[in-house]
Length: 164
Image (cartoon, rainbow, N blue to C red; front, side, top):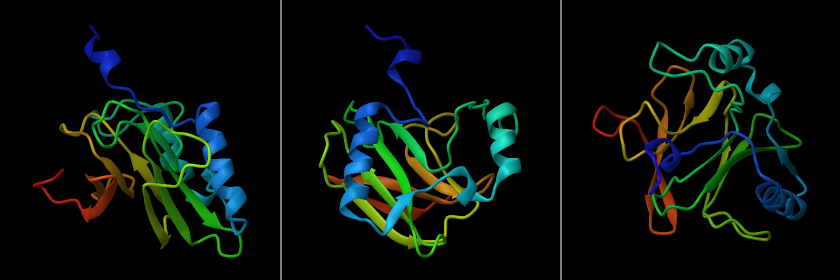
C-alpha cells in the first residue's frame, strides 16, 4: 500500500522518455522551441519559489521550472506532462502542450492552447490547493486558469473561488 507521500508526486523536470516526446514534437514543428526560465522574465519569483516557497502555504520547490510539470492531471494514476513551447520568430507566443500518460514517443498532445503570452506565468500543480488537484496556469501569486479533464483532453477556465 502506498503512503500518502508516495501517492502524490509532481516534478518540474522531465525524465528521458518525456524529453523524447517533446523532442519528437519539436522535430515535427520546427518553428518552436521549449520555453526556458529566461522566457518567463520572472527571476525574483523563480528565486523565491525555489528557495522560500510562498506565503507559508507553498513549500519551496528547488527544481521548479515554470514551463514544465509532470503529474497526474486527469486522475487516472498515470503521469501526464505539460510543457510550454514558444515560437522561434516571436518569443511572446507560447503554446501549452499536455501529453496524457502513459507517455510515448510520437504521441500527439491531448491538449494544445496556442499563442498565449505566458511571460511571468508558470505551471502549478498539487498541494496546497484542494483535491482533486488540477493543473494551474497563471502568474505567481495570482488566480490564473485551470485545466479540467474532459474525456481525453482538457478544458481551460478561469479560477474562481468555486473551483480553486
